[in-house]
Length: 106
Length: 158
Image 1 (tube, each protein chain N blue to C red):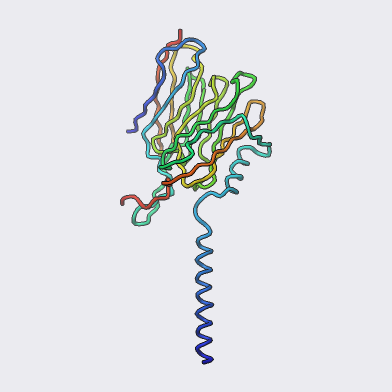
Image 2 (cartoon, rainbow over the protein chains, first blue to last red):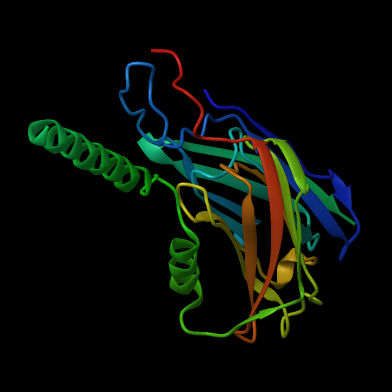
């Protein structure tokens, strides 16, 4: 099973810009490689990453085969209110992983 | 004598034909060309004008391993409701596909700075294009030298 690492500060001041780092284990098979016998290895990548903050989408990334294995994405958001930040990765062969992190905003 | 000459001529012509065939076959590698990159950019941008500036694309200039190259794009933008970055797209010239990644941001990002790790198949030019909330497009490019290419190494195990 795929595992994801998420780095969200647990606590932030209202209006502060926080940096979010995400890493998920995935081979990101490009579809351009072949086995030693010459058979093509089919594409298997994560195509979409979406981040929502208390249900509102704040960030989205469309990934292509040129993204390195174990996609690592860093972005930022403004800490507006306490709640949960949810992350979803979806891709080929029905790949779908959802993770969440909670944040307290004072 | 006459026969020998014709045989020699035949070999010369045949050899030339084989060499020519080889050249034709070598011309079409499975990689995006600068023209394909322009097509991919036009698909995202449409007919709008792209102005160099505002965008900063950070990539190491010399890359030992093209399989995981840190890439950071930042845009000079206040990120307010009235003036913010909507999208950031990254393209390459010589990867098998010109598209690398498309980021969608909004005023809630606070800061227009995103980072990821990419694969680069060859020494080439990488282009980042951002769309601002007023509809204008801005770009930056970086030339990189890749010593160990991604994607195209020999086969993996069976």
